[in-house]
Amino acid sequence: MTGTLLRIEGLTARYGTVQVLHGVDLEIGSDEIVALLGPNGAGKTTLLRALSRVVSSRGRMVFDGTDISSWSGARTATSGVGHVPEGRGTFVDLTVDENLRLGALARPRELKSTAGADLDMVYETFPVLQDMRRRTAGLLSGGQQQMLAVGRALMARPRLLLIDEPSLGLAPIVTRQLFDVLAQIRRRWSVSLLIAEQNARLSLEIADRAVVLAKGQVAVSGSAEELGYGDAVRRAYLGVANDEEGGKGAGR
Ligand SMILES: Nc1ncnc2c1ncn2[C@@H]1O[C@H](COP(=O)(O)OP(=O)(O)OP(=O)(O)O)[C@@H](O)[C@H]1O
Ligand SMILES: [Mg+2]
Image (cartoon, rainbow, N blue to C red; front, side):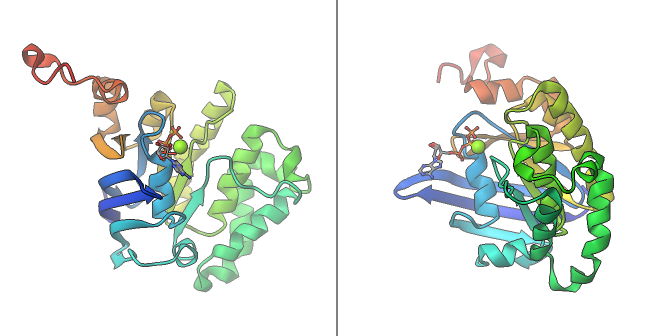
């Protein structure tokens, strides 16, 4: 890790009376890709929503050296935290180009003047969007819409991009293409990525580190390589305790 971009400590979140996150600690480095893994209902989406302040939470969040724990969603979004929500959230009646230009509304004020150059860079990053710039977003394929959603978020010039289930509903080959581009954008855009994904194998391929959530807590974290080769991820997903060393801890 080359310097910490985001550090959260003791993050808790609830929907009504039901607590979903139970004290999550997490660090993301500058230009780092972190895979957020875990079974259905583990709290991945809730964690991303808490970070972008779409759901309220408690705990400490320090972003780029500044305590942002009490910031609003709007302030967080215009200060470098981008969010590509599950289901993409593009405007289906607007064109590709209009969607991208809307993304620029969340740029930090000092970067407003460079939006045009970044629009060009989005089209270089996703050439297929350039070919379809005047097409209505609702007519794009699922993979193209996901690229548009990422491109739109990049137009805000985030330092950290939260991406929720990018592979959802996409064919394997399209998912692969999308992840190849995600692997490239951190350098091209100087952005860190936190990717919540069910596809553990593919996300571990492009990630530097991975964090596995289970029942609203960090079950395992480590380098993507460690987690990819070991069976810690499988254990965390299946909720099976470590049965090495003579079955110690097994049987939960
Ligand atoms: N709006 C909501 N109101 C009430 N409970 C919710 C709401 N959204 C999620 N939950 C609950 O919070 C828990 C965590 O859900 P969350 O969507 O964060 O999990 P997830 O890890 O993203 O799961 P998935 O892999 O299915 O996307 C689940 O038990 C879920 O039922
Ligand atoms: Mg989710």
